[in-house]
Length: 373
Ligand SMILES: *Cc1c(COP(=O)(O)O)cnc(C)c1O
Figure 1 (cartoon, rainbow, N blue to C red):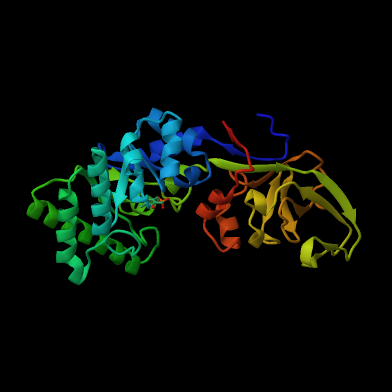
Figure 2 (cartoon, helix red, strand yellow):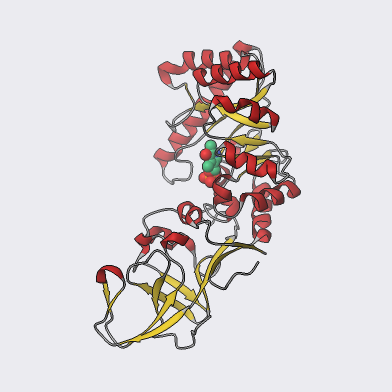
């Protein structure tokens, strides 16, 4: 690909493979591995990452919506794919035709999916989502909802033309430290297994795949692995709190397009939030918030040049931003600049933006070509 040497993201498939093996080594042998590749594999490219996971012997993929699932099928990915989010019931024939597994989040949805499957004469493979405390999607089953939850799960499993292959829940605080969070997570797990046991024994069926462990649980509660784990962020090298030997997989790169020299007291970029305090050698980088470099980071982080860190100054614009190169005379036009990645850690940059690593990786926009190593 001709990069035009503007701005690009280098994706290390080797590091994703490394992370996959580290996670595999951390969970009980025989546990299935679902790789979460939603949101274009957290910005890394869903097709490339899925091809790699398929080759490495992963068991399942998860995406958030039908378009993401179809992108993988169109690229020739044959592995089972679970849609974690909403699909309007009229697309059931497409789900069946493309052998895609759909999450069922409540009894009303189960009825709609079943009706559509009966109409088209196929069987829809589904996973039942239980809400054990995330309070987002899933069958309510806590406290006084328990009996009703079990009854609704059994009724969904028995509906015609649905094949309830799996059941899962999602943790709210498995990645947060502290006793309260541990208690909350253990209570979620305990409720999850109780609802499953009650449903299976009263309903006389068995779920083939029970799963609950997102990245936080894989790291902190490997004993919750059950039949399958469901990590996302760990695959991409973050979220392990240093407990696993993970490697970042995306280097967001740009170059120096222009160098300007300013006197002291010159106001730089929109809003004039920055004024030079000395004679300043200023680099203009061809990356801005339309590439995914959040405007909220303006003046709050440094980029990494071959000669060291350079502070970003002034408002980040849509398509470019400025860095102070006064202390780095070695940096010149066309010098390579790392915004974040292996030489410029993402975690502190995410903190400076008041967000998490996930959001900064997902924000890298379509305009930024991905280059695979
Ligand atoms: C996104 C998602 C995951 C992966 O979360 P990570 O924190 O990246 O591991 C797992 N399960 C569900 C239901 C999700 O939505």
